Image (tube, rainbow over all chains, first blue to last red; front, side, top):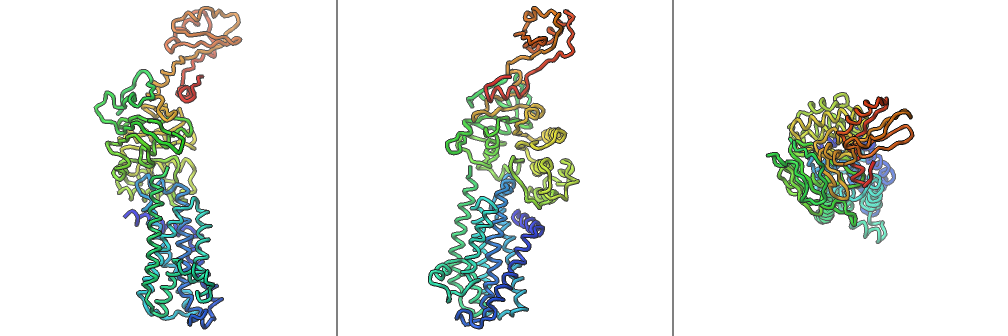
Length: 248
Length: 328
């Protein structure tokens, strides 16, 4: 109950942050437009057999998933830690885990809205291919969102300041997005890049969405990989919360 | 309410000798702290801190910067871990009974903040709701003079306005024990006095108050008892009056005199300790009850100085004496 109350307040506060709003709702569509403008005319994207605009549909969705989870969320959390907002809540009996849950919930809603906005912006310009496996797309999107949020929470609880969270978040997001569905297809990557790409969580999220969307292929393997990343994230979150609980 | 006021200050380093807040009272202490220790690496901050606080008492913790005042009260509240020692708040153990205690504790932390964009009204409503709406947030808004600020964002508030908001938030669950850490830091003199009035009101409404401060006048004005934290323990704990009486320096009577005045033999007045001259000024150190005889003797000798001044020891003198070993 208190997590929902907090989430409502957090969401209201977010609407007053123009920078956060721009980051959530303008950055992903703009990024998508640039991306589609560059690769949209490819008929066979890197030998994958699909057009550029179709291939990158999952990459578009990966933008808010990665950016909001790995940059927006950690900055919010680290700022609360840095300014002792979390201590204020702790002193009132609201554990940090509940504030984290509220921020994670708000971020999840933002990702859903921003992903919807990206797809809605792309549809009239580039066209959207039919979805072969709606369940697979939803499963990939949900698993990817939860996993990326868990990693964003780890970042937000681990770094000392909001500025550090922003720098590290971008450092993690950009390569992960470029290697994980937003950049060149794996077919044209070097072996080393491909090996890295294969283990990144965003790769599994975008690949699951793409394959379910375009071919209806099973996404179980990607969901398992995301589950492993989520488990790692949860263990790290528990350790960081415990460290905070027993600090000083 | 705490009524025991020992006539002599009680200094101690042994936890076993800590005077009980509830001595002579039937009520069990609201707070009992025994043998609290805490180290940060090689730095031993608390070395066996012990004290207790009676229900509805305003208990002050004084100490130099960095001595561990905030660490102490945050451990007592269960916000930090201790190395050893026992704590009971209303019979509850803060580390074990955290959830139960949160419903009866209020805290204004020395260092904390709210989101910059959160408005005063929203903060009061949010925390009131989190506390189960046991208090009407509008009442707190009015009591703590936050009405005109209710639409202001936290980030735009002055230091004093933030403190008022934090105190209001500390009371939003109608707490039985309230911890106020450097409550009036950053407030102007008028705002400080108004805050003192409100703290007394908090006590009148039934709460026990632990006040951490380095303002001597605040401790003297507000606290029923004051503990002076030094070297990891309470080096003294008593009423402000008891601490002052115990400093043992006596009062100082100062005045100027004409060169023709006869000041011989003033040392013979009972309980006068010494008489010191500096040009045409004199300072007499004496027991407090010797002031009237001194004035009477001066009058008998037809010495009527315009600048006759009696300087009594203050809590600040006690503080300096206890924490540095110095004297006035």
